[in-house]
Image (cartoon, rainbow, N blue to C red):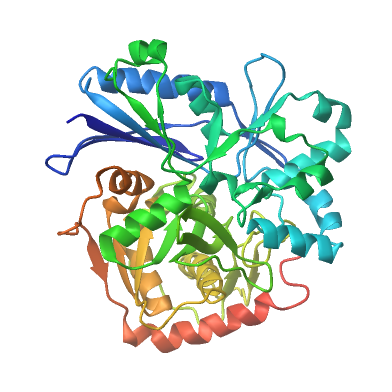
Length: 470
């Protein structure tokens, strides 16, 4: 039997795992960084460079593992790539690209249309989505907008390069804001509103769709002559699947540069406040939740502020003091859930001359976790769902992980086997998990009252009319 190469293309790195089915073991795990270009409200990457790096990495991997017969693909959500004629695309807009903020604020004034589009797609109306960017370009750069021959995403660009077929899966498509996740097709009413021809979009297929690699690509990459591409799903959905298969818990929290709270559900569920997402994964599998802009990047900012680099903070977190009245609202990059307001900013409440560096560090970390807890409380969870599965680089820090357990008052599980590549592996091999390789963190009852009181203050400030406004 051949090998699986599971590939996860996130917003900061491409991660690879070579998996062997017979012995259910990982033979290789590696990653390559991706460069993001940030200028003001703009956040972009070069998709052609990502594609070339992907092929280069696969060639290197296949030198030692030439019998790879499946490449399974997970990609970030909300990417948008304009293609003009036969030119190689040089720009890909990311979820964090905020140039459409004003356009979306105006669009949301039409509450009926905004609600309708949300109900059709399950994607909140926010500058993160391709819908928002398409609307922005239609209104502000109409001539160029109409000149674009295709609007792709990183998944469909890779699919075309490797197989010759330009396809995107239902999961990634359901995070675009233009895909009807009831009917599993591009929504014609939304496309008409955007003045966008469906012919300019990728074909949508089920995430378990397999495509044969082009012969020339098989030869170039050095993989098996029978190698296929498993289209796969979005990174967030694959995290939810991999985590559930490891622990049987449907609750996941991811905290990397940004973050998200997710629930794996058997039914499509939308929030009446239109502030949670619901993305397709598989028949009777949906991923419901809320994303935050303000995760590990807030900690990096804090580390740079106090220590002049991004990492030192994480080694300075032992013995932090409790600070009952100092509250930090972590919205340094605007916010998606729970506020869906790109104009939000960060704020300290209760800061005095008595507060020094340790107190401020404690308050900032609490603020990020309180925000996740607030998102969590917007979702419909049953009391029996008591274990949180944690993923993302931030949870390599035990102090932060324990703080999550204490604030949520839930058992937390951390493992390297809860990444998107684990979900891809589970899909390909249908492996039954007998042993879990990770660590549990039990909540402390001693800190329960302190965090409950601090969280009440956080909620109070969150709902203050002037909260976080510049």
